[in-house]
Length: 156
Length: 194
Image (cartoon, rainbow over all chains, first blue to last red; front, side, top):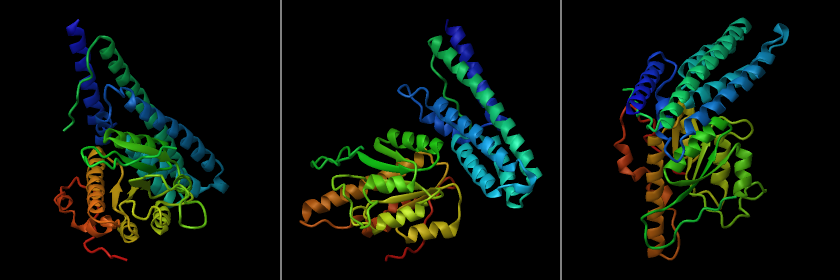
């Protein structure tokens, strides 16, 4: 039984490390993990869930604002990018945040096509991260169900 | 509505602070709430400057609050919010008779020096760069507790309360040691006392 737990813990550790190494997550994610304890075992999952909902909503709004070439509301788009950048930064969603930086630049010069490309990229990145984190949380659940504890992962 | 109350007993071992956190981002509200709760603070979160003023009872025309028993030890607010910005909220709080002595900390994702100076000049206690971390909150809490204890001690010695916080803020030397690269605390070299 211990072998199973140890194996799962190893898997979890390696997977999380790879997410940092591949740039999906940054240090802020590890800061959030510090805030999770036995009393609040779902804290990180809840926060990222809110983040993904945010992504979906904001991407929809920005998509509508960018729809008609003759009538783009860049102020609206800029507001959306600002919010997305903020929340991605708060959860450690590094790739999403980085796209937002390029996105803002396109917005500043009112480059509609650039904005659309960035929007597609942001959509791709948040969905990719969502899948990755779902896999991570599944591993967590498996560890707990096997009677083990979630490993601390030091990324430095 | 949560009403925080400072223990007025002589024991200063655990002072539970009541913090009002203002941020239009749901994600950030959740994070700041957790950061504060883990630091043993009571937390009330609101989503806008307007809601914050309503909570404080400052949405009337005068600067006095209807909520005389409401104890808030710290207000943490985002800078960029739709409607009332964090700066405008700061001004209203400092203009009020009921809450002008409550420390107000501004959070922002943007490191804009003129913005920081504007807030500090208006009386902000500190300016934090987002994303906010546990170390930031712990530091804030220590600062607030020290000033609360100093005020209580002063009240015990003298019959009339004194504005300790305004007088000794720049003299909190231990915080000056925190100049590590990871420190995000913004300091002005000279602070104008209005």
